Structure formats: C-alpha cells, structure tokens
Length: 411
Image (cartoon, rainbow, N blue to C red; front, top):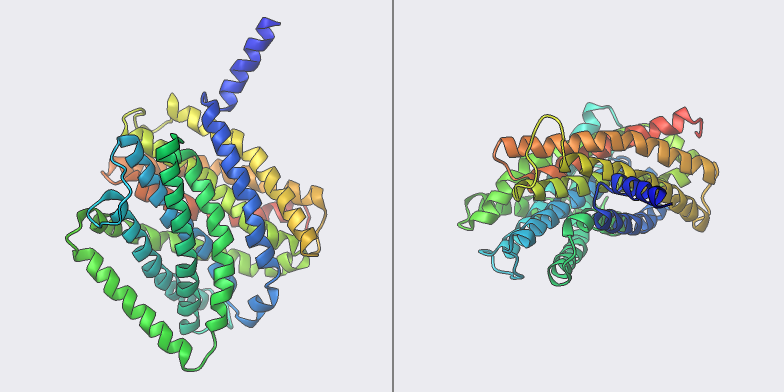
C-alpha cells in the first residue's frame, strides 16, 4: 500500500511539474478565466446583427481581446518579476517601477489600438475582404473600445499585483489567466459599445483624427521622455505589439472566412473567446514563469528544455485538458442561456479539447523558445514573451479550432 501511495505521489509530482501549489493556483485562475469568458462569448453570439451591419468588425475581435492580454499580461509579468526581486512599491510616479509600467501600459493601449485599426483596414484590402468599415470607423471602434476596456483591466492587474505582494501569491501563476479573463469580459462589450459611434458622417471622422493625433503625440513623447523605464518599455513593446497585432488580424481573417460555420451553430461563437483565451493564458503562464526563473538564474536557457524548464512544460500540458474541457462546458452553458443553436455538449467539448491539445503543443514550443531567444539577445522576456505567445496562439488557436470543427464534422 505504501508503494502504491509513493507511486501516486510520483505521478502527482510529474503531472504538476513538481510544483503542486503552482498547478493548483494556475488551474483555479484558468477556471475563473474560462467561466468569465462566458460574458465575451455570449456577447459575441448575440451581436451577429452588428457583425453584419459593420463588415470587418469580426477582424478586430481576436486583436481586441489579445492586445489587452498582451499589454496588461506583460505588465503583470514585469510586476511579478519586481515582486520576486524585492523592488515592487505601489506609486503613480513615472520614475518608479509601478508608475512607469502603468503609464506605459495605457499609452501602449492607445497607440496600438490606432495601429490595429489601420492594419485591419489594410489587411481587409490585401485579403479581398469586402465590403468593410471605413478607416475612421475602424479607428474609433478599436480605440474607444480599447481605452474603455483598458481602464478596467488596469485596475484588476494592479489589484492582483498588490494582493500578490501582500499575501505572498505567485503572480506568475495567476496574472495571465485573470488578465485574459478580464480582457474577455471587458473588451468585447466595450467594442460593441464603441461600435455605436461608427458610421456618423462628421463625428466619426473628426473623432478618428483626434484620436490618431493624440496617439502620435503620445508615442513621440514616450520615445524621448527622461523617464528611462517608461521609455524602454515603450521602445521595446511597440515593434513586438505591432507584429502581434498582425498575427491577431490574420486570426480574425481565418475566422471571418469561416463565419458561416460559426453562424450555423452560434454556440461555437460562444466558445471562441474562451478557447483563444485559454490557449493564450496557458502560454502566458508558461512564459511568465520561465521569464522569472531566467531573471533569477534558476534555469539556464538552452536549445532543449531541461530540469526545471522541462517540468514547467509538463505542467502546462497537464493543465490543458481540464481547462479546455471547462471551456467546452462553459460555451454550451452560455449557448443555452442565450438560446443559441448547438451541435450538442459532447461535440462542443470534443472540439474544445481536440483543438486545444493541438494548440497546447504550439504553446510550449513558442513560449519556451521566445523566452530563450529574448534572453539571448539581451531583451526583457517579460516584455516580449507574453505578446508573442498570446498572439501566435490566437492565430494558431483559430486555425486549430476550425480544424477540429471540420475534422469532427461539427459544421
């Protein structure tokens, strides 16, 4: 009996990557994120009329969700590292770690929202998605919706950081899933609300010009400001966030091209935010934990993950199955609440798990090597890891979700 117990204990340590507390905290946070995605999923399923009235709006959905996760997930990762390093202190001053990070996050939210809007229009033209909203409509919807959501997500991120500092939580285990959850909860409703400002002859173009001008001025100031931490964050973040935004828009194209499949069973639209969010959050957890351990010298970057790094990857695989099962159940429940057509609980859960396992295989590869490459080139893995991982997973996740739908004959 004792041997059997020892064997179970060894299996448990292997499944949890040798860190049961991290596994438990991550699973709880990912579950909360999965349940919270219900808000975004139901919102998306109930806005099919808006999607048809404003063609191209669906292009912005993955980007709108991911940009907030990218910016504020990276913010949380940097704050988590500062807590581990003993330099964390709540302050609004730009010459402090927290103040500089907060200012950079809000500035990036504005600048990247405008950039995403312009890229969305360009991508629609390049890939012959027609008709679409005007450039002014894209800018207003993306920027106003983005700023409304950013205020909410910033508040949650700071509360998590303060709670982690005070109650000795490991922010790396919870920040990515919970920021993803708040991004799902806040971004889509904010985007739909901002869509009410689209289509006005004078107001919309004027507002677009004002927002564009402010974003250019803010970016110019950030590149020359005397506040070194703020300047470094913005300079390092803008290129990678733009690249991440392009990947998110390509994910939007994949979804837009298969819109009929989602409209046949709108419960799949309910699943979409939770599925993409779960894939990105798993990558975010892995990226955050690897970045912190690299900063603290607990693991060495190498071509093959070994030791503690290998345990981290094993834990992410162990988290993926229950997380995607939950995503399927939550989507089905949301579809029932919103009275949306569904292929059935079993099919929805199978789509989520099969697509999710494929996505997880990409998660561990992208998260590990992105973090390692960032360190090799002397870059901050906290700033680069999460945006690259979550945006890559938006694209890959959209592809694997549709692949699972087609392979299982659901639509």
